[in-house]
Each structure stands twice: as C-alpha cells, then as structure tokens.
View 1 (cartoon, rainbow over the protein chains, first blue to last red):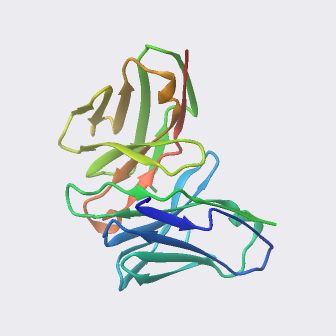
View 2 (tube, chains in turn red, orange):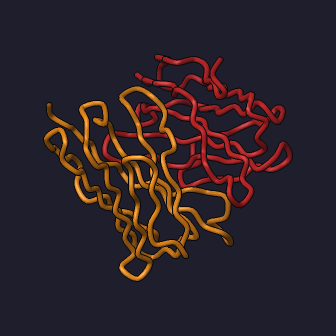
Length: 114
Length: 115
C-alpha cells in the first residue's frame, strides 16, 4: 500500500462549490504539506503543518483552508471553488529532523473547476 | 523575493550521453538543496540532497554539485537511458526563519532521452 494517499484522484466541480481534498499517510511523519502544481510553474506551497496543533499558511493560501484531523490526516478545502483553482494538487509529508528533510509525495488530485 | 530558475524548460539528449541540468537561485541562502524526479501524472520522488557545506554528492549514475558562491546547483545523469526521461525539480530548503521546514521548488526541466 502507498505510504501517502490522496482522495479523490480526479474531481470535476462547478464554480462556487465547496470541495475537500483528503490526504492520509502511514509514514508516521509529523509534518504535512499541501502544494498545487500548474504547468510551467512548479510546485507552490498552499499550507503546511508541523504537528496536529500547528497550521501555517504557505505562498498561496488565499481561497483555501486546511484541517489537521490527526497526525495521519491533513485535508485541504476550497470554500468556493473558482476556475483558476484548476490544477494538480499534491500532499507531502516529512520527518523534518536534520538529515530527514526529504518530502514524500502522494499521487496527486487533478481538479477541474468549471 | 526568492527566485529559483532551472536552466531550460526542456532538454533533449541521446542515450548514453550525460545530461546536465542547472538550478540557479537568487535572494536565498539555503541550508540544503534537493533534486526530485517527477513522471507524468505522478508525485515527485526524492533523488538527492546536498548541504550548503558540501560541494558534490553522488548516487549511482547521478551527481549533484552545489556552489553557494555562484548560487547554482548542477545535476548530472551519466550514461543516460530512455527510462531517465522525466521532469526534474530542484528545491531549496532553509534551516531557520521563515524558510524553516519548507521547500521552495523550481519550475522543473523536462528531460527526454532519445534511443
């Protein structure tokens, strides 16, 4: 089984709808991240969490919110989806200690907002 | 603001040659730099990490250099194979301040190795 899973893998929604993307991990890592990827722009950090009680905004948090329900679960919500939120979304985890800065990514969720 | 540029959007080489990808950055003093591989429709996969006090790291056919004076990292794949075709991302990480625990990614270079 994959260590980092994302659901759904693909989602089509309409402008104004609220949607939630979910991420679960079995790696036992404290740190979790949400990124979006657009063609030619690389990965942009939306939100990140260093433990269950810690939530931080990334570069592009406007229009998004997150919930860290447990060490293993980190959800991303689009309160009112708009077409320019159409993108590929990735969840990632890391252990975070020196020597363990590697991030482990999920398979991604492809979102289309009409 | 921090800026990371990977030398070209696409790189085409012949099988058996060495692929060299470049990552340049400005307005940043990273504690370490990482390289990831991303295949179409999949999440990035970690390849190598090099720290600010290291000049070179190797892993099998991969080699990474890090020049903090030039603010540049070079990523080499020797004896390249068609299976090496993918997008390669560089990412910078900080040890403290607002960069702590986060990675800033370049836009990626699409490498195609032709048989």
